[in-house]
Length: 145
Image (cartoon, rainbow, N blue to C red):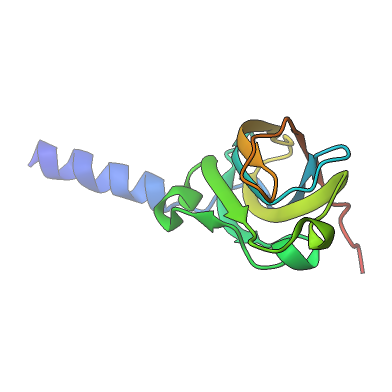
């Protein structure tokens, strides 16, 4: 009897409404390939703090990376995901310099903003040669309208 009471109390606590506000945030992920044509990349994104959960991933701004990158759909309900994309286009059609490669949507709880981290796993140019890149993430400003 006591066991059933303990279980029902635990379930009641989990289903109780949260008093902390829930926020949805859009985070833009950028890659800087300097003067090299970016044909492929793989990144690891994480958001810690604010009880962050990844709820969606969109593609980037350049035509060659407009489609959503490849990722494990099971991974996006966590606070970390590895994703990547590639293009078989010729070097003259690929982006150079700073390029938005994805927008990641987060759900957070509370007032704490999540700490965003992006790590580069790999990047290549049209010929398949490895290239050094840097990556960053920035939360899009909220539209209050």
